[in-house]
Length: 181
Image 1: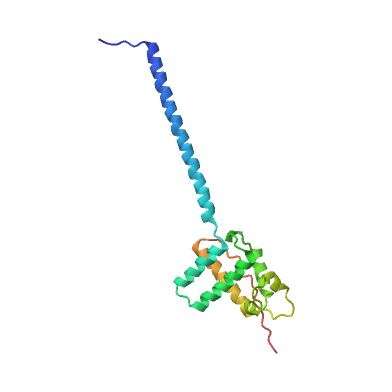
Image 2 (image 1 turned 45 degrees about the vertical axis):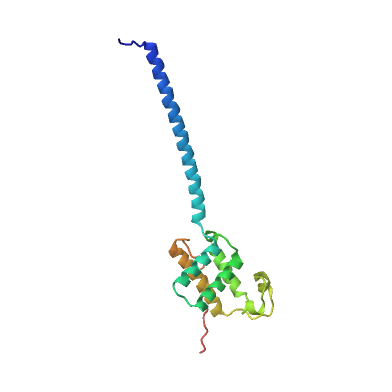
């Protein structure tokens, strides 16, 4: 008892099977596209968030690094003071947005700040401090210390892979001491 299938029936069976395969492939392809789109958007978000560190976050990580290395409290406080002034001047910007011109501007700011600004003028903004008249300005040695600390922060950031440049390196021209003849 063999069952005979007509050519027409074979065509219909093949067509049904082909339609079923196409439907499954289409669903599978749509699922793959959705997965790919989801993964790409997640990668973009991760890329953006891990690509650039904020200035405040960098300062915090740097301070933690110094603590882990056993730096003394006075040195940590000096770094924090320098970092806080930097944050006050630039705000909490992504570090990769800082330019060499920003580095030069920061050095100019340091040259116009009064000495002992926290003691003599507490709760005074940087803008107000710069506009003060007849005040003793920070010495070149103190300006150099601030610059060295910020440069150390960005050297560390480069070594850690947070940025690829130190926009503060070499911005402070050395003071030439005059010699008496």
